[in-house]
Image 1 (cartoon, rainbow, N blue to C red):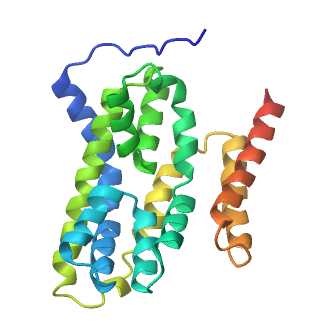
Image 2: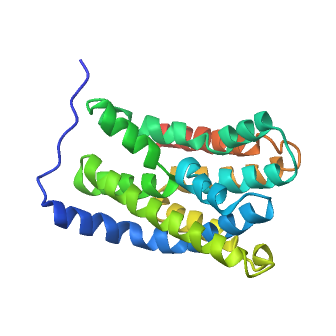
Length: 237
């Protein structure tokens, strides 16, 4: 029989909103340059301001948006764009498996909402909260995801507005926010040897395989890191 999700202690709605917002705020602020870049590049690729904003509202995937925008600007057909998006966002399958037992008892409305707002940042914050409290709090995760969604779309809007008046935004180094955001999420999780080894192997494999397997190097490097981390975790146990 599948065990039921252990419910967290009751918490006032206002306090929960405040806590989830504060926890997500550092990552939300760090992603602003990334969102500005997405909005500006979308205009350069030939999208209208409305199309550029809808991309953040509906697609809501930073790395995939940058890839899709670049391909769209180069005149790439729809199918390769969709394939690239699926590859880049494939890590969300792993995030889903991590929270699978926690969300299965929830209604379809809750699961669909959590799935839409699930990003790397929301996953990191919700996972840390689960480790702290000992239980997954869907309301906390949803609020954190919504706060990040709001910041992302405001940053995109700012990029759209700036992109119409400032040329060369893509050459101002705004893409540093991509690496900075992922470093900020990764470092706190490196608490033991399996975590450190998995991170180093994934990063090293990505550097080696990118020139050879440009289309799938992210998947290959992620799998390599997971295998190493899993093997070391089993050995330690």
